[in-house]
Length: 268
Image (cartoon, rainbow, N blue to C red; front, side, top):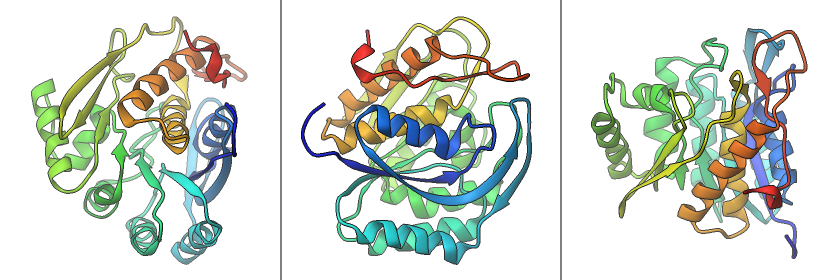
């Protein structure tokens, strides 16, 4: 990976256990040779076993962070992860609507932690769908997150695809429906105006990983920042997450493992 260092940014929550959120995003950006900036939307209190609290940042402070980052030219891609309040969704959308040029936006609509702890509510999901997703190059929900965005249960693949297409009609550039939360080997579905592309990898053995969704979205953003076309970027990001999961470790008392960043050239 040669040439000028691309710049990426992440707007999301801290993770005091070091598993997910901004920590995972910055590690991933660095692995892909990108400089990472960050916008703190919330501070969480977490251990390797649980999420205890989520503290939202003042919306004006979130807006000022993003505005200041975007004043420096060259931010190629922005990941939006945990957004705990509707007010923060609104200020992020407002700053991005005014940005010129606007970075490629990857929205990872986090609803709950991998431990099951709720991280944001229905009102936030509605705000994401109405305000941020129309600005996005791609959204990366799993099924539960897509249900929250759609505001209804999605019992099968057909319903999921229909919900993804409604997001496209509302302005979202593409929807990458991730499959890591389901049984069996993960299958991601990239839904665009051109159709549906299926991508499958072999699941890593052992217990589940924390920080996987964040790592996946950050890898996708880094690849887009490096000029990779979206379909190829989606395939490579999935393969990269699988490689990270194979290298995952359990550093604390929790059952889950933290994904370990691996060099992108190690992909197989």
